[in-house]
Image 1 (cartoon, helix red, strand yellow):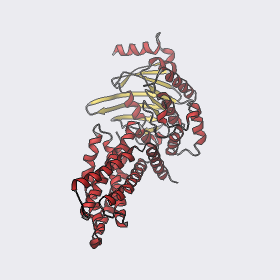
Image 2: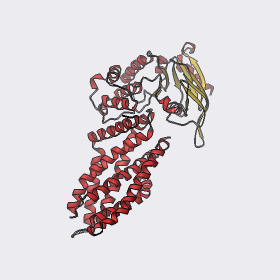
Image 3: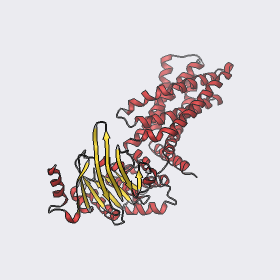
Length: 233
Length: 224
């Protein structure tokens, strides 16, 4: 479970997050919707232990940030619009490198499974720089799942992907969702978010302005819900 | 193998494997070094055997300038491709990441030295392939890559990182540069070999101090 209480983050004089509260039970897929600059990436980077909050409390699976950050890192996987991969290494080498960092014993079977899951088994020995953006993003998801984290954080995973790559990523995320991960995905893509998530939180001016479960969405779906929240200001 | 060593070796292997395939840093650093040596050779118009002080100075200025290119590139490649986030997300002692990157930078700097020293010796008609000089190059390279990797990690967070690294690095590396030049000059001058000892001691002290500082502060340096 992810629990965020009165979380604030300030950059100089600007507040990126202000008194944000959020609770995500285990196994839920929550879409975090919001305009550019609403604070989505800041929130995800704090949850990923890459950024210190200015104030507030964050616990992930009962572990508190920032005190237990090293332990929390074992329980989260992060996918951003950058793949966090090395172009001069092959797909397999990239996964093997991260497996070493995460201390995964005998990683070969896990790497094989992830290359199969991401549809990249036939390209395992190719340098990542020869991959399309969509293939890199699928491998990035494989990298994030390598240590079998219960929590997956996705920050705009569809950025820069063409329609075909988006569809393949959809399929992959559906498979991942069925494995019971707790997922928080920041995205501008309302239709894709609606297809995947089971809850929708709208972030405006650094705080959660509204939240809605999938069955409670108004006619018009996530798009209508998001617009109504934004128009309310 | 302990977690620290495993992480260190993994990061160093990753950097060296990537560099072996792209040869991005090595080729730029080597070409730059050779060009600097040539430029000094023509600019100073030296026809006879070079004074040892001058040879040592030119050699170390070449290493320092060329090394800065490699250090900058090594860390900015991590930042541009998001690799730094990938490293920081791992549940490992972050100082092991520092020592892994430093080890890779050190290997690259020593490979450059292996090529540059014979070229320098030929061009300036002075034999640099001496045990004492090799020891100074080793000690100087350890200190320079330690402080350089640490400051590159700091500078990479800034938008002006390409300009920032030399501005941060050169003043901090000055004691190391002076000690390396003096020790090299002492070894090149057969009559005063003993005078190298205090400079070698200074190099060792500098290396130890900056390795410890980097071990202590790297975690804070890479925090946003």
